[in-house]
Every structure is written in structure tokens, then in C-alpha cells.
Length: 384
Image 1 (cartoon, rainbow, N blue to C red):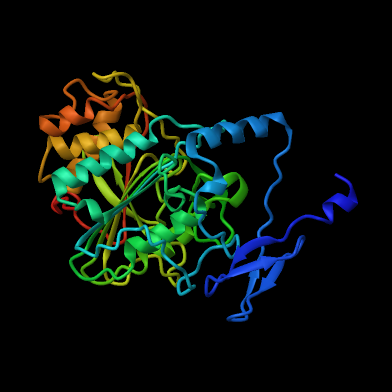
Image 2: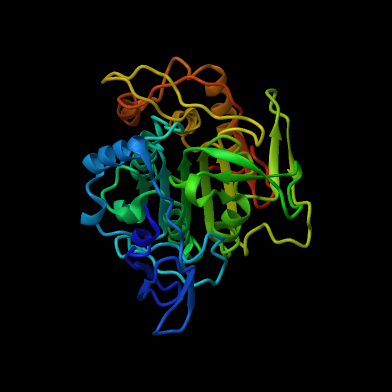
């Protein structure tokens, strides 16, 4: 493209990071000032896609998901950094408005049309939603699912949508609330820059657009959905990714042997740094240790053949096989399922008949248990 042609590029439209007003940004501008509230907003650069491969991928995406110009687009982020506590934000109108005592955020990312594609993540979300509704009484209008199969762009699992959805999960929570955060996708490790990690690495979740927008670090996840939890509020996170052991940056990691011996390890290297809740309780089940990788499963389904995360399957099977179990027995059952390659008996009862239609299995990893406070894992009942 010549200089004369490039100088005739059209102005871009962005949104004010404070009031949300539409702003016209001149070509090449790095920031623009809102005429209403006078806030300066950074203008994100859009990566250019050149070549036949990118055009072909864009064409296929257009066929599957519709033309981007024909669908409403979510406002672009104000910056590429973390949204800190207290930062202004607007929840999409399409997010559930119900504010009952049970609330769940379920994220499944398939990374379609990339070399990182996963097959079973949407199944994980569907299975977890079914379990929460049928076994634990979560209302339909209290479950927010983000997948690449959603028609609403605000429910695609992009970095900024996940950030907003995490705020939706904890917004306005009060004593007696039960929150669930489930994530199925890729996870990575990044060098720790603030010295709060025992192993020298931060854990991170990979959103749909992580190659352009970056990952979501455990520090941000902790600040967003752990620290706001007040007295009487309980959060359970089920994280089915690689390197997910301490993904919520919770201070306590439970070590448990195959003989049942267990102990809590304090992973808070900086006692002055707040990594716990504000009086509530946060507990996470993760697919593997920080240095381990997680896998999709490979069990034949009765109706066709598909996949699901091995950790998600082991969690569901453990919950269904032993109602009213404790955290220690649940974790031991999950690990036994993984070691036994899914087991032979499968998930019992009518819920099991649903899961057998969509679940496949095979892998080897060690599910982990972390918490914001230490407790007796064989005495404390598991309750969502």
C-alpha cells in the first residue's frame, strides 16, 4: 500500500474507558480524549492479517459465526493491563441479572482455527452446567457460560469478557452465597515478577485471544474473585488446564499421599501481601500441579465420540459416586479415577446416563486442592 493510500485510512471508533461513550479516533492515534468526561483512553492497535491463509480463516469464521459487521461487538478494552479493583466497568446487558444465593461462571475455550485447538471444552461447560442444575439446584438464570459457540459476542471467552464475567460472579455477593468458577482450556506458566511465587512462576489462564491480548495471571484472578469474598460467602473453582495447581493464588496447598496422609503447605511467600478473602472461603480443585500438564479424555460415548477434560470428568464422577462426601475423599476419588484411566463403572444414576452421551476419556495427572484457609479435609463436608 502506498503512503498516499495509507493516509486515507478511515478513523476508528473506540469507547471511552470511563463513561463508555463512542469516540472517533484519527488514523494512527495512540490515545483519544473523551469530549464528555475528558478521560484519556488508549486506542488498541489491531493486528493486520495478510495472506491467503488469514483470508481463508476469516471466511470460514464468517460462515460459522456470521459476519462481524452484522453482529454487535463488545467495547474494546481500555488498556492491555489488568483491571484493578475499583476500576470502572460496565457489565453487558445480556449477562444474567439474577442475584440469588447460587451463581456460576463456566468458561470453555476451544481455540478454533488455531494450532492450540481443543475438542472437549464446550462439553465440559455443558456437563458442569447440567451437574450444577440437577445435583446442586443452581437456577438456569444464575449460570453464565462463555464459549466460542455462543452467538452473543459478549459471551465469547475473550480476555476482556472473562474479566468482566469474573466481576459479574462476585458483584454484590452476600453471606450465604455459593459461587462457582469453572474454566476449561489452556494454562501456562510465566516468570514471576513480584516475588510472591514459591516456584518462581505465575500461573495463567489463556483466553480465546491470548496471542493478541495476552494471558490472565493468577495475581489478577486472586484480586478479582478471591479477595472480595466477604464473611459467609463461599467460592469453589474447578480449573481444568495445564499448570493449574495454584491458579487462584490461594495461600494453602494440600499435599495428600495415596495412603491418605495429608498436610497443608503455606505458599504465601509475602505475609504482608493479601492473598486470602475478606472473611469468606475460597477453595479450588485444579487439573494438575503447577509443573504438570492436563489432558483431554478419550472414553467412547454411546452416541458418537467426543471429548471432555479428564479433570472435569473425574470431578463429576467423584461427586456423583459419593454424595455428601468430604473434600479429602473427593480429591482421593478424583485421583483414583485419573489413575484408573476413567474407571470401569462410570458415573452412576440418571445423571450418569446424560454424561455417558458426551464424555470420552484418557490421561495421567494429579488433581490438586487449594484453599484460602486450612481445614480438616476428611471432616469438612463438600457442599456447593
